Picture 1: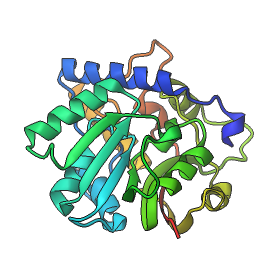
Picture 2 (picture 1 turned 30 degrees about the vertical axis):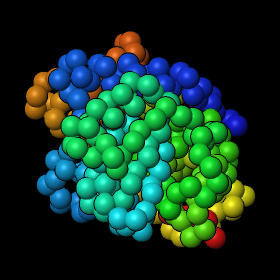
Picture 3 (picture 1 turned 90 degrees about the vertical axis):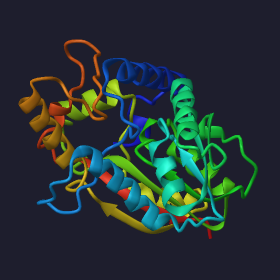
Picture 4 (picture 1 turned 180 degrees about the vertical axis):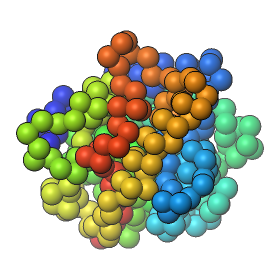
Length: 280
């Protein structure tokens, strides 16, 4: 299903959603500095959700080609967990942007607490019109944020503009693995509705990057290592602890018909792409 056939996210509404989710997580004790899915390398991996979230950031770091002299843009930075891990592991300087004011306040507080505020700076901004000069960054990362942006083409064009030649973008994006089905799984509908997301068209992804001025290096279906396993892990935790557990360990409460992680348990249509591209 293409962006044009879906209800497109409104940036201001996405910001308000994540303001609310961030405050809720801090208030109910479920706060996690990572607001993204996890990555389990093997089916038998015994990694916790928290460990798998860090592992996904490490998968990005392995592909970013970032060093101590690099400047990395974290596009949709959440509350700063991945950016701070990049700083700690590579020594790179990180600038993060989010449409959520509350996420930015929290990310800058965490950077100060980690004593890396001189290397990690987070600011409010819209990925559709990045507030940075041309060729400002050596690398860009976008962990599970592209799906919240109303025009992937525009975002990638902006990414190409702010990347230096040879610079890379590494991202995860959600897609439907079997998009030609007559009826989309209701769990995917609920996810996209309540979390203000759209699914990508994998058949058009290479062309989409090319039209934006970027060159594909790698595109991998990592559904088995990410979304499928995460839904199973959350369902298991909820059963053991007898409490609702959501994607980031916070609670999504949108009413009786709201999205719950269990809605995607075993739904292999709900896929995750790992993409690496570069500016020629």
